[in-house]
Amino acid sequence: MNPRRPHALTVQTFDAPIAVRSREQGLRCPKCKAHLETVSIGALEVEHCTGCQGLWFDVLEWEDARELEVAARLDRGDPSVGSNHDTDTGLLCPKCGNVPLTRLEVAHHPGLHIDKCPRCYGAFFDAGEFSEYRKLNFVERLRKFWHLR
Image 1: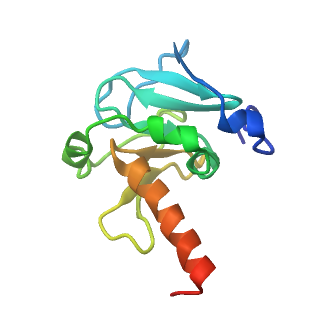
Image 2: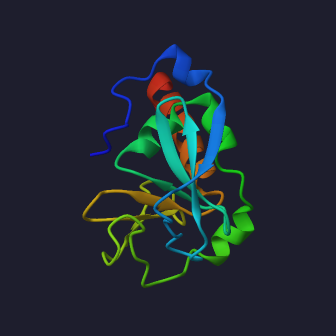
């Protein structure tokens, strides 16, 4: 589990500025092998690829991040670049090293795939995928509000 993961989202987290810094460990993107930089929103930290613009989230950080309004600014990559990498295979976890990532299709959204690590439970979103994932959350809330299936 990520020790820096906030236990509860606070009002300060929602309005927090985004800060970017290079990673000391030199993590590499599982897709294009470019460097990952750390992007901080309050106590939440995710890794952003400097090449293909994908996003790496530690365990369940994507669930926390999708609730934040400021998270809309995280996924700043070109979705067409992300879709070019969507068929890449043999991907390895940037945190665990030699652990292959498992490609999962997001329920109720054919074509949206997330690459997850079965060991550390981190997840990689290609450029544009996290924005699509966030839209799903909004649609789910509307459906629940209106009691639709």
